[in-house]
Length: 277
Image: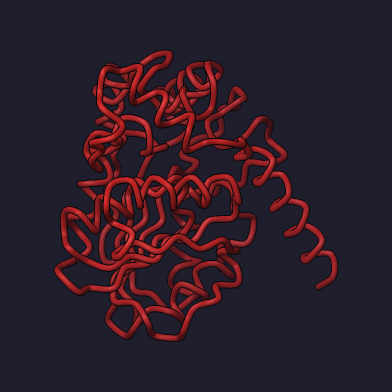
């Protein structure tokens, strides 16, 4: 047990370091201004090119949110919420209250500032915390989502068990993750990891098996690999308004390596819908 806890702490420190950048809200607002938009009249949609830090960006978020049975008043948990883009999209587009939990202090601080800036502070709460130990009430949520987070989580069964605990019976858990689909070597860095030692990819069977063991019924799996050429063509290059504003110009190389692995059949982006039973 001590060894597992040590590994978890080491990984959490690596993740915090990977997603560490001071003054991130100001960086994002400067990028918005450089793109020609008015940071004083900010909307969630205007942030969509920079605060959705995953393949497919805002369009992929909308695709997942559309599967989560959301409506006004539906309490939603976002596990690993990053800058808060998906949480704000859910609150603005579906009218639901959202709690977003992330491990990075810099990201949580920036997410709070951006959420307040777009006028959603009364609907979206950003918390600093670990996905393995959610400081949230049992059965509080009707839906949960996790977007491109599992690749940084070595103990997915523990995370899924916590999500199941805070979901009400019958609640839906939607994941948009990348999984291993072939034996080919991966080229690092990737968007979520500098090197293999901080990447915890699993295959689809392992992912869905962990969900079932945690008390979920897997209802649907959708391979989104076919959308990658469109995603790659649509993804902006260097700043001002792209994830490169958050991660720096090296993000372009990370994204290219990711897309190359998907096209080679070594990785696949998948949407998984699971029901709490």
